[in-house]
Length: 340
Image (cartoon, rainbow, N blue to C red; front, side):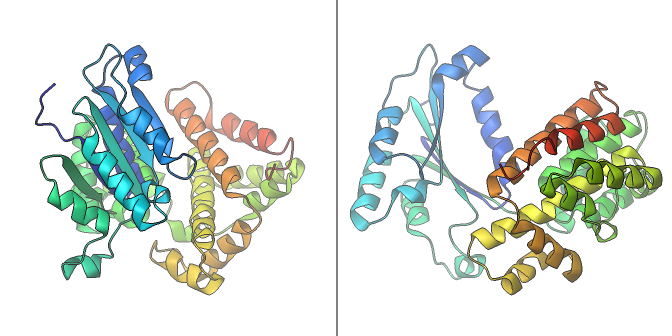
């Protein structure tokens, strides 16, 4: 292992999906699945003490050149000046045989303050140790940046998009990197990687968010009313292709997740509406999403998204028909109240 590699990676994840991809690439470099299992450790600053991080960071790698420690919410470990000093002292003691990733959600410094030269104390420390620390902000892609990402990502996956198609998709997904990756793969699958995805393909397969304002299915799922949920689902399937219905359901729950996160951050409902407007969610669906968000637990919404991901993979791999997958999902979610 080269001693010139960074030891501490300070990642600021406004775009959590992009940051997750970066970390996954680091994990892949550790070694085979078995070796990685021995040398990759994920911790959460909200649930550990500094001593736990010390033990993991100073441990010797097993049959690998390097260990990888991923620490979510590192600032949760720091509740005083003395705790800050201890954390920084530890980070300066980590040997080259370990890479410590500090993953903080969002940006440490407001962009306006950053432009004025202001820095969070952790950023200042990182800038003072360039030989040891790699620092990166994963900013949300907007406008032209998202268009360029779509064009480049399509080529990485072995396909091609026209610029008009990329611009239209960027309008639809706004800043949602996770969704845009799903949509790119879906569109490339649709053209079977044999031709360029054009704007008509995007219009046919990717529904606009402003057309998805019916939360009836979300209501039924939340209430655990399987009969009502299946009735709503079948009405939707009569009007749209099953793939489009699936993505519309995902979009509805994405709005609810964003609303829930805003409320969890202490925003008032009116402030949360403004937060959702930054994601191009119109006033009416934003208010409905906030209403729904107060009925769901955040953990429940996370579990729902895991189910959506599994369904997406199964549909794309041909393991299950989209309509059957949706009906199976509804049945599974309504066997018991989803707030459990």
